[in-house]
Image (cartoon, rainbow, N blue to C red; front, side):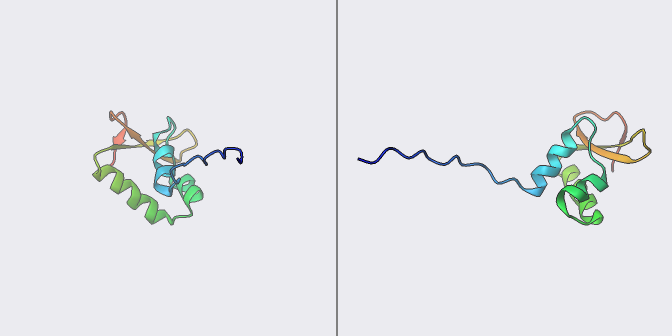
Length: 84
C-alpha cells in the first residue's frame, strides 16, 4: 500500500482588486502611483476602481501625505475629504 499523499492546500486566487482593496485598507492608504505599480493598470482605471469601491458602499477618504502626494483609503468614518 503506497504512503498517503498530502492534499494540496487550496488558496483563493489573489486578484488585482483584492490587492488594491488591501492597499486601501492600510492606515496610510495608497496613492494612484502605488496602485498603478502594484496592478499595471492605467491611472484612469485606478480612479475608476476607486469609484466602484465608493459605489459599493465603502467610504473612500482622500488625504494629503507629508510628501504632498495624495493617498486614498477605505474608512468607516470620514476624517478628511470624502470623494464624492
